[in-house]
Length: 288
Picture 1 (cartoon, rainbow, N blue to C red):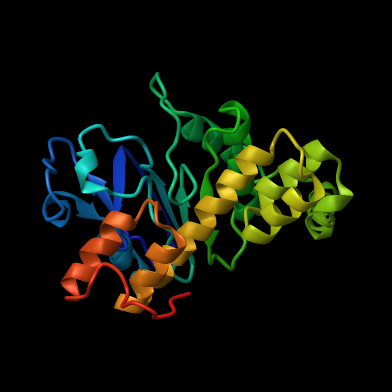
Picture 2: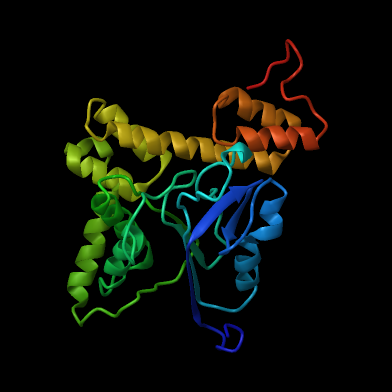
């Protein structure tokens, strides 16, 4: 359908259900899949990159790949020691990838036909005239608000052209003023806001520096525990992604040294066995 839509279609892929990360890849788990051991994951689940890679090769003006998959899956045996949620990824040029929860974390248990992330996303999409980055930043803030901090979505974008879901009513001056105000707010240091606004801006920016700045400026804040959790999860996710990319015994030893109780210890040990390496570095070696 995308290939037949002309040279500049907008492609939106939204998937809801259960996902998992395994050996540096994210997977969608179909209904009825049986996963009892590590080898069952690539055989019984669908690798998300197998969906997104063909899209990247097709002509499209914008590609939106939205994965509402970071949910607790009771069908996964705990003995597999799989890390929770989805693993951090990079977007292809012209694409935006979004998760319902930050990499390495899970969304909250929910009841009802629609979850917090879907509600927040729909609200943000209907803000006529808002640029794409603003829509997904607003989705993160709204989901965090609706879930009282238990759901903090994530996205990464390499979309470099203007895009809105709905056109704004004619009022160009107001639109320009609003965009200018947002840009000015984004440039202000976290410490220059009051505590509540600083928390909002840290979530809006959603990066390690912003979270560190918040903790430095407001060490005793009631938000500190949540921010520390997001910061720790992001650091661990980036470390694991780097370890998988390098794919050496030294990289996995380094991960295990930094995160002896980390969520990827099971995978790190499996990787070391595949490399015919010991689970621990030789005595007196220096691994950092």
